[in-house]
Length: 349
Figure 1: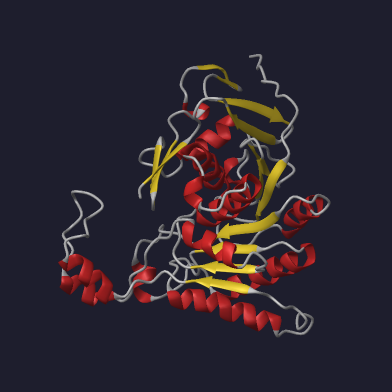
Figure 2: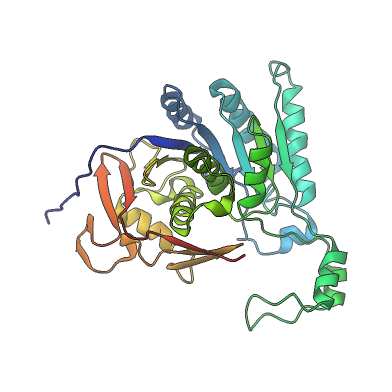
């Protein structure tokens, strides 16, 4: 079958660049591929960051309850040593969310402890890292107070009613953060080197970094100054990137993303043998989702109903009608919104 590839006009200038070494901190990653991407990015003035998530609910609530991490401490030390080396060498910030897997306060402290240990090792003593920590645990007294006030509801009809006794018996309670607390930290300390966040929505650090530079480029100040369409596009790039190279074919470990000034973005796997296609990105959007058209998160819903990858009215494999134009350039997938409203984020205030 012949495939048509939509042609774009002159490419927009890049707004910011993100390298995601792996979809899960502690799993290890191909450092040669990550360094190659950072080396290329270093020749351009575009703001760049290393961003990855450390959280997972795959194992259920047990690790949060008993206070264990998703990966062994030694795995975090190994990955941190590589990531911090890249951060220093290429002068790019490192952002990590859901420390230790569950994002508990003690695991934020664990990550901070590992960073301190590494900076005291021979060869690293000269490192001066401005490190930000954001905690997400909620005191039980606050939960009980809200429960008694009737302001707590379950996440569905099948969820058992919460009781004061259940709250008191719970070892620790974390609240899932959206990008706002991370963006506030970046605004307060734009010269930071490392940001470690507690329990976070997987997209949060990606959205925070990209939103910071979008606001800066547009002369805006507040997160809410961005339109639902702008927030939607930014969130969608984060949603794809947070799993690293899983959006490619064949699936891999690492990926990079570039947000452009026109709110188009480019996704590329770092594995030279892989590439991103509309099909591979659409398949990733369907991954582990009960409703791939609506992704519910803290503060709002990422609505993908106008995303061409989910549009069943496809002309042929690489061409999509409606809201987006899609361009395949070597191994990179370029997605750009049309003049109509792109992906929406219905923010709850």
